[in-house]
Every structure is written in structure tokens, then in C-alpha cells.
Length: 87
Image (cartoon, rainbow, N blue to C red):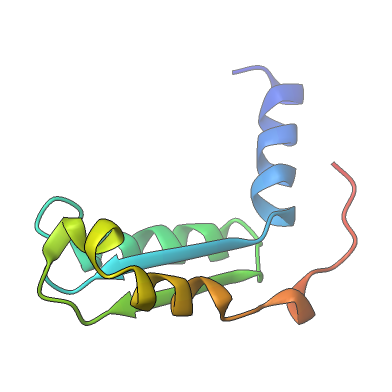
């Protein structure tokens, strides 16, 4: 990757708002993997990362079957952490 592309990618990661969600019973994408993603995004300089863990029995299908829990997680706002950023 060229330096210019890498700089853009790093700025994009540092400036974007991310909401990482994990499901305790998800075997396809385990919560440990989601926590690691959250840590890596924060290490990139992004302080607008939110991690939300859903306590559901539906595993990976939680995002399809437990719509109310997923919607509640999405509604949790972190707009107060958004800051101006130049990419």
C-alpha cells in the first residue's frame, strides 16, 4: 500500500464513528473477536468507538431474530464524541 493510501485509511479509521456489536452466544464471530476489533480501532486513534454486547441465546442470528435488542443497541448514541476531522 502506498503511503498516501495508508494515510487516508488511517485518517478514515481515526475519524469515523464505529459501533461494534457482539452477541455472547455467537460462535461465528465470537465476542472476543469483537472486543479485539474495538481495541484495534481505539489504538488507531479513534475515540468514537462504542462496544455493545448483546446477551442473546440466538447466536449469530440475533441480528435477524432479536430486532428489539439490536435496535436498542443501535439507538445508544455517541454523537457527543464526534469531532471534526480532515481526511
